[in-house]
Length: 182
Image 1 (cartoon, rainbow, N blue to C red):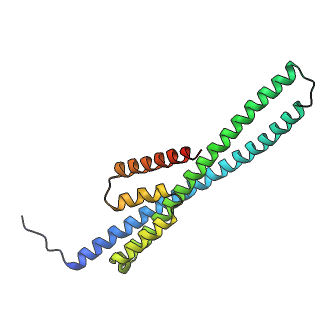
Image 2 (tube, one colour):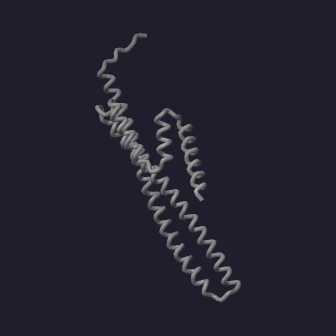
């Protein structure tokens, strides 16, 4: 079999085609993340608002119940009201975890956009300084130190599994440190 003669122009054309397809795929993922986050945010905003109103209503019921004559009915209202109040507070904490998830997904989406912009510009794509600049910008946007620790681990060559383990260990250490403050 003879070896095909491939010209430099063919490689550039092939490379550009691969870059263009990569950018299209990155744009697709960013778009999907964006729509998913908007849908989730709308639902969570509605739920959070409902829980806040229910929490206020439960607080009013509990306050009114304290003015009732002492007895079994009053005690049942107070006991059940406090239980509902505690459960709603737990739900609100869960919404805070969703907010953290949403922030991370927004960050991931922004990082993919930065990557697509870099790959889409032939001059920037070939510049190590531009890659470093993009990595620094992405790192600065992280809102938690644990996220930065994981990002740094990946940039140092850790596998995905190793980076996640490093992240979990860091978060666990932070939780332990916070517990010691009390």
